[in-house]
Length: 301
Image (cartoon, rainbow, N blue to C red):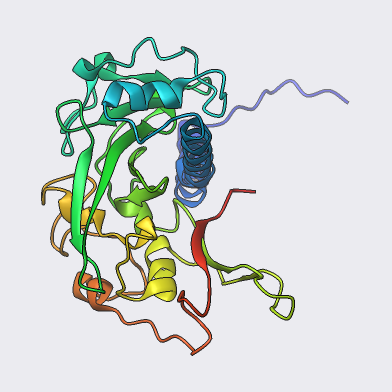
């Protein structure tokens, strides 16, 4: 059997096909959000690598580094290896330091580049550590030294911004690294579980204790509240309110609703709910002298 006529799609039919493809692509991009999926993994890797590298580096130091250059060199030390750096501290220079309120993150100020492309800047106070002063719940006034580490956790891939919004997660994040050997998340990762999940860990102390109880997944802010409520004690640096040191227009300051920097906290109706929320705890919850526990950030699996 033979057909002499050839059929082709009309212009209208082609336009209709393109419209359908466009709708499907839009739905796919909106649903999948590739950066949202990768963000938690990238953030977790940086957080745990930074914490491990600094802790191990300090095992060989007599004191908390008094200069930002020394602090940077500890993190970049290839002999430690936990940061997987491409250079061994050659770019660790005080002249590259940022402040506690940088508005830009220039490439020429990068001090550490990781093998996965992530870039790190050091925040310092004229080459020296910042100092956090706080009145503890006991009434004692404590002073804590710290540096800020700013990280573009996915390198050149973008969006290459520290400006967070609910629809677009920033890929430049910040951590406070303290003389108490704590690495503290700063900014929206504290309240946005698209960056991290935290939990309260109750390690086994006595033979009759339950073996290593762990709380449910929650935001870092919620975990702090579950563990310590409003208690502040420099014995555990993660109770400190280092957020208070940041200027109000900082990209990493959690500010009231109405600002472009307001926190993403889906369970609260407003910022006032976020900052005044009281989390009910059972008598056997919360860190205390009687019940040892600590806050930990999940390592991504």
